[in-house]
Length: 414
Image (cartoon, rainbow, N blue to C red; front, top):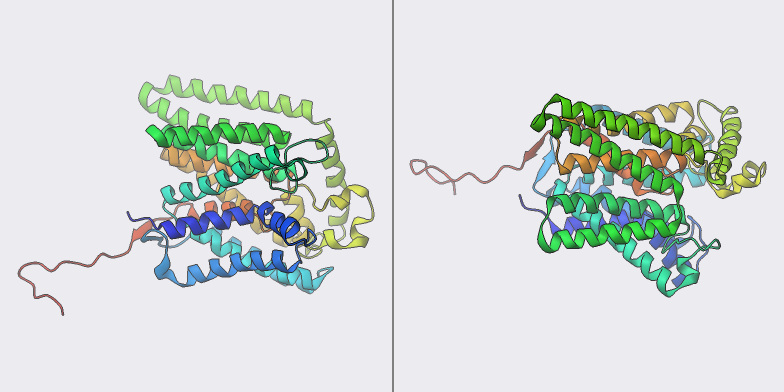
């Protein structure tokens, strides 16, 4: 099947932009603009991604690989539309209506970008993701080596080309997941290049000092290996091997819970627990409709209650959605995440392969990250990939009709 290099590059550039860091680096360091979502350059870049994505969906003849989803998963499509409509509507009761209105419209474009990714042949998707993550990891490592002011934060943790370590670390973790998949499936120079990507990404992830990203990565990759390994091992060696692998997964889960319980008193989680408590108190004031999408952290009165609220997010996407969109907006978000997770688990069990392993590890990691970070905000690649995974669940693909060569007995149509 023909893969469009131009569209693969377009998707890679879109994902890289939606990691946010490169945009703010250019705006702040080169254009000397404040680090703000509303600065002209920053706003124009994210709006451009949204417009290009919508345009690419509308102009179907420029599709990626000559194939398309017949119909996206209908439940996912309804949930995404519900989520977006309520998001835009929340500008009517937002604390800052103009911010919510402008930002929520960008999310319409992000949903179109998710549709493009869902429509991608896996090889093209993986290539685009590897390219985006590879550029981010390489540029971040260069920033650490050559410029302390750019690459390091005040605690001497690595932040690379990003604004903080918790933005860099997830991108490095995604590079590890994608690279491991390529290593298992490739040979020769490609395998060496993928191995180098995994190694460099692991070094960057370690340098960032992000506990949440490391924990999420280990859990996600372990879960994916257990699901795929149990299925493959059972098919080749029998039910006893399958049971042994699943039992090993249970042991791994117990160990992960034990590690988490030890980390629960760490400052990383202690601060988050305080933020979550404060956010729950604010949610109780408007539990159904919320305070309006992606605006409360810019409101001085809202964040004045506690210094931790000045960190700019609820540090958890589920709390973030409930805070901004209320229970009415939280329901479709939970459906999107649930479909993405359930669909990738089911696919990996029914069709064990490097492809299904990659999707399961990726989605599991993104879900884990959303528990401790508000990656639903910031026009993030994280939400885009979750929406794409949800749209792919249970969907068939069809190739575009090829021109039919008339049989020798048939007259050719002029």
